[in-house]
Image 1 (cartoon, rainbow, N blue to C red):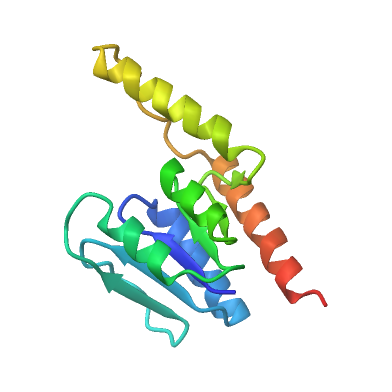
Image 2: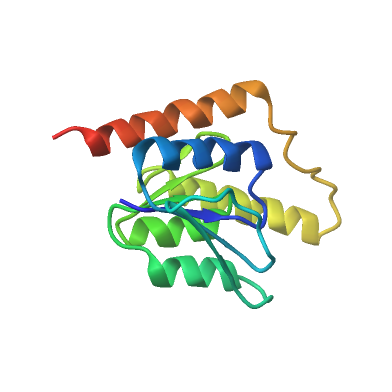
Length: 150
């Protein structure tokens, strides 16, 4: 298993949790973004800068993932592609996207997009809370524990 981060919009606190996990477990962690991302010095952590452009980071992640890899993203269409490629997708709020829940998430995303396109102010997601950070860390630990078990 490798961990990939859709890093352009990933909160710093979530990246920090992932940096510690990579160091603790020795799992390769790669941040993919269209800007330079600072990472701590580690043989387990690297970053890839892609050209700017719509979905450039997403496309790079999809191109590089293998079945069983873990992708950290809040991007629902990217999560759907990850699942299609037999990899795992986890949101920075700790929601594990699955084949069972991704179609509903895509429909809700499309619905909200159509509301915004018609001029409705839908607001944005609430700020990341302590509960969100804990949910993320707990879900990450579960996934990493499964990887370590025989």
